[in-house]
Every structure is written in structure tokens, then in C-alpha cells.
Amino acid sequence: MVKRTLSVMFVALAIVGSAIYITSSRSSDGPNLGAGHDQAEEDASAEGIKVHGHWKLDIFNAGGALDRSVEFENALATGGEQMLPLTLGRGMSVGPWSMLVEGLSGQPCNDGTEDTGCNITEVDPAVGDGPHVFRPLSVDTSTSGELVLSGSMTVTNSTEIDKVSTSLLGCAPEVLPADCAAATEIGTFTEGGNFTVRFFTGPPDPVAVTAGQVVTVSVTITFS
Image 1: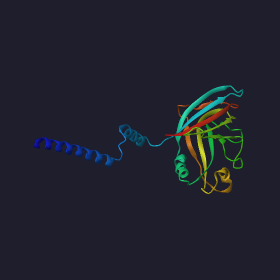
Image 2: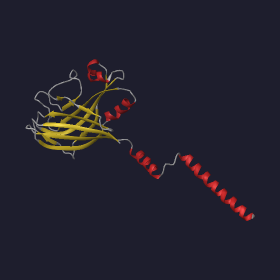
Image 3: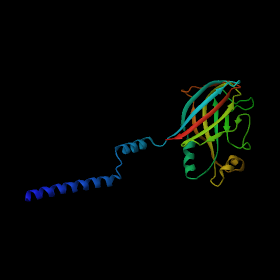
Image 4: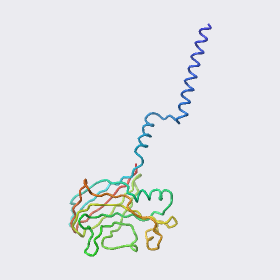
């Protein structure tokens, strides 16, 4: 009888000890949500948060027929790294977007008076205009997790496209976003620069275009 009682006590103590061990190990590390969850957290920590830009250029001949399409990726530029904290922390007012398409041996929008890239933009015409500026630039956020910028331009100078970029105009926090489009004119411009950028050093290789062609440009910006 004594042996049986001791055996029961030993088993009970073992169970209590196991429970204490499990409780203490879980409480010291936080909630245990399973190995899969732990691995997901490790992967997320290792990769960090990334900004992606998926570009597509559709090049149409003067008659309207599609000549070819080019797709490629890019990532966050230095200007984007500076602007994201300001935007999320309400340190600036968000203004208009622009997309710039530039050439390798001469600019695609060189009309003989100004050798410049093609600028597809939301910026107010009062700030800057010319044959190299194209409107409208569409900003679409209808798909969750995506920001899509798109527009079109007409090539005036035969060349090779070798660079594309997006830029975002930022103003002082007290400036309303609707007023930020003309901020340079009223002296409240605070930030501006490439948000994303891609040089065509292969792949893709520089893209040949000829005068009179129309290029529709879109970039889908996502975060992961």
C-alpha cells in the first residue's frame, strides 16, 4: 500500500514538473504559435520590407499597330527611401506623381529646341509645360496593395530608351495635397526626387524607338 501511494505521488510530481517547465518556457519566449509561424517571422525578419516596381512599355507605330511590349522590374530609389518616412510620419504633404522616360543617345522628346526626356505627369501646367510634358498621368489604387501609375507619350526623336523613373513631389505639411501641384510656384516646395528608378543595362537592353511612335507606360508599385 505504501509503495502504491509513493508511486502515485511520484507520477503526480512528474506531471506538475512538466507543466511548470512548459509554462515557463512558453512565457519566457512569448506565445508559441507553432513552428510554421516562427519560420515565417524569421523569413520576414531576414528579408525586410521591399518596394517593387513592375514596368510595362507598349510601343505603337504611327498607324496604331502594336510594335512590341517590354516588361521589367525596378526597386526603391534614394528619394523614395527619404520620402516614405516623411509620408508615413506626416512630415510632408503628398503632391503629384511623374514618370520620366530618358534616352541613351539623345532624348526621345528632343523637338529640336530642348533635348529632354519625356515627362508624363500630374504636375500643374503652371509649374512647367512644353512638348516633352504629357498628361494625364493616371493614379490607380483600386487593387488592394497596388499603386498603378500610367500614361502615354509621343516620341519626337529616334533614339534608344535606357532609363525610366518615377518621382513624387512633396510639400510642407501645412500645404494641402491639392495645392502641392503648384508648390514650386508659391515657394513651399520641400522634397522631390526619384521614387523608383531603372537603368537599362540588360536585361532589358536599351529599347529602340523612332519619331512618331506612341509609347504607353505603366508601373505597378507593390510592397512585400
